Image: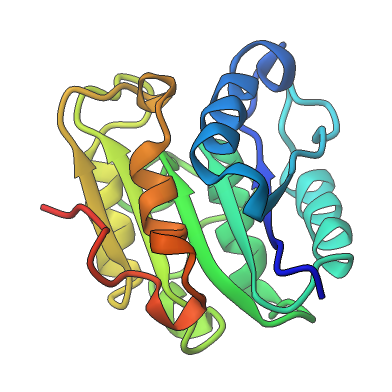
Length: 199
């Protein structure tokens, strides 16, 4: 055991997102978490046309290779698909935390769902005891900040982090996320304790 914790980061959708947009989020996360964390950043299939079936299958494949205590992070539609996949089928590994960044809510009050809608009891379907963090920029013009409130209602145990002045990419600054998932490099039982910035 090297002491390195794993972070699985699921990209957002759109042409060029993996290499030209969300790579900047990965750079920020790597700077903040340093060598104590192994960040995995797989390329999702057909990123310009995200499909729940294809992406959820790819996410489940990635999760089978994780160690217990790994943290899963999803940005934008990657977060939407990640949380639905976790709600539909519990992961084989014990997760350290679930983090959604600027994730659109699919369902009543949010975006219409062609392939799926998030269940109203989503929180009860998620792995019990695993901290859930919702990050959303208040200047997000892609997924309105109201979507974060919809997630907070569907996942009552989640901690909501509203970030003033941040856009859909959180201005390419994931320092708030890093402070929350890795405060003082402590273990999973401390996630969500002091160091997390909420409003």
